[in-house]
Image (cartoon, rainbow, N blue to C red; front, side, top):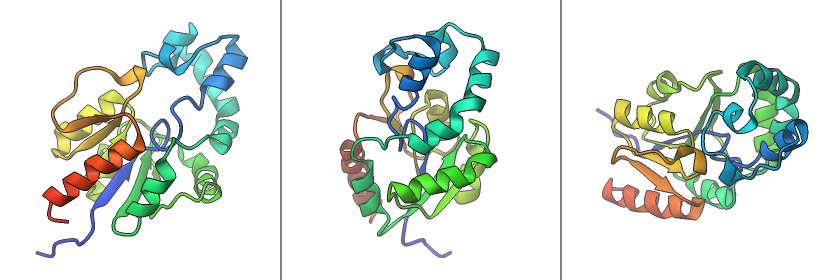
Length: 195
């Protein structure tokens, strides 16, 4: 059996690599709201907006390309990923649909963010993609995804803390407030893993 010399880091994009407040200016303008990130206490944005799921997805179809093109990076993410790319594989697994592949890859290139592979699964369930890519650690902002990944694979999942994901988690889901904190935790995990 060959042991890999590098770890495979699986990363969600939206709300993890991008600033979790990315959608708010667009939503506030369209729906005449003044929401801040602290107001978003549920991943389902329709609850904060007071609209139906159909209304939300119709709006999303019209605006998603613009939002994804103009998304801001999460604070500190670029320095951390740049360092990790030297020794580990960075595999992004996102719920974005496949028609957004070019926009997504262009955004990574424009932001100078490293990647080895980007997979757009088109749904929130990332289990099969994580299994296929043999991910060793995952970074996520969606609570139920983090829990499912942690429980299915018994790997560490870094949960980027936001008001919409503050439910209880299993022990191998590690809540982190900033990318520098994520790096510190991962550095310790790598040492414990013999890296």
